Length: 376
Image (tube, rainbow, N blue to C red; front, side, top):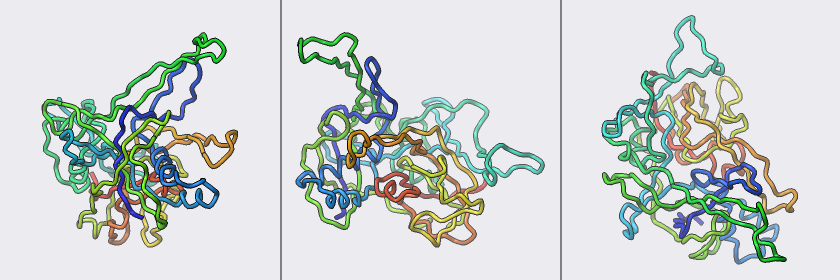
């Protein structure tokens, strides 16, 4: 089974962050659904006609995901969707909104006699300017993302031309009703946040809003029935329209056939054994990504923003043991700069996961796009 799903929310969706909540506290949402939330809903939908026995659960955990990615319908009702990816962390925007210039961060050799507090073998990133960078859109269009990775200069005069802004949030106040009196319990108020799946910006000069959806490619050796057209996803079982789509994921450029300096950009958050970097890079002279024993990469630089928190519930366990431990993820958009000692065909790494854990790779964490780079 190999299908690409388009998930179109009918109302704001709740994807909780890992922070605890209680009476009087807000239940806040992450900026974009984590892979575990989406693949969990997909597996539940695929197995909805079963009794979720142990064999079925084991088979469902083998279902793989490439995503989730943002899809934008630029013309309402057209049915034409385009992908967008998280903005790369190695790109800084300078200037004003009507005159934006993009500066790329690249590893810079350390001068003789100088030193840094970076880990051994990691070079500082150069290319920034003295002035303060301006904020850019949360997502870049697929075209701009691929051009940036390929080294094509991006000629833009407005930050909105790079891609859509992030999803807005809708807050709702809830109250606990006493079963005995039918009235509100004193102090039992709480707030939930939901993501509105409409984005602003894009290529429209007026900044109007476009419909947005979640796109994920699902792979499985076993055949599963289709998911119901109207099915829940996220907290409170809010509904979305599920359908198969012909929207294709981007293909690797031919320029990646032979590279010695490789740039990997995370397009989904990644779980690594060593926190900000993969555990397979534990040795100073590099390592091989899981599933690629003949690929030897040596990390020389990285642009990694602040981590995001990840937790959740394991529905295969009893309630008291179901809560997952909180962990920190390298956010989508993080960029890692590698060198190799021999020519590498990097197309094999395109849209693959570089996470250490096998289940994390199946769930869709740590998906990367590839590009080249040169020393600053």
